[in-house]
Image 1: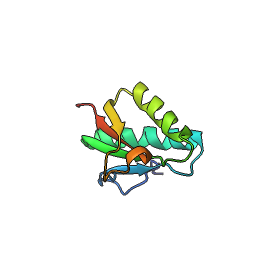
Image 2 (image 1 turned 135 degrees about the vertical axis):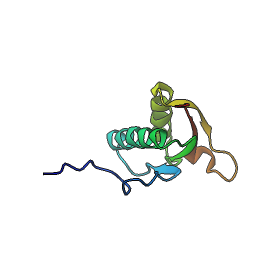
Image 3 (image 1 turned 180 degrees about the vertical axis):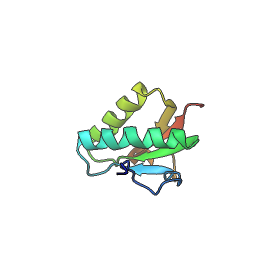
Image 4 (image 1 turned 90 degrees about the vertical axis):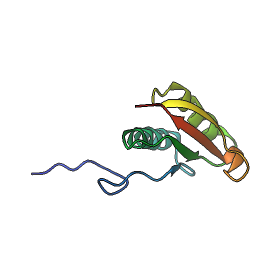
Length: 96
């Protein structure tokens, strides 16, 4: 019997350069964010975007709090012009 891990993309395929968290609950968003950051780091990505939307700002604050605690994150900043501004957080991942 083969046990397959739950992945959001095919094996041997790097994750997309952004993850979408809009319309998720806080627990769902944090779980998805943690898995995505791990997968992006393992695949050697240097920078990723977290799309959380503008809304009330609650999800944005939650995401940025979690990013500040994550050892795989080197730094992060709000999206700039053409990147989604306050609806996106751009993340620089740590070196392997």
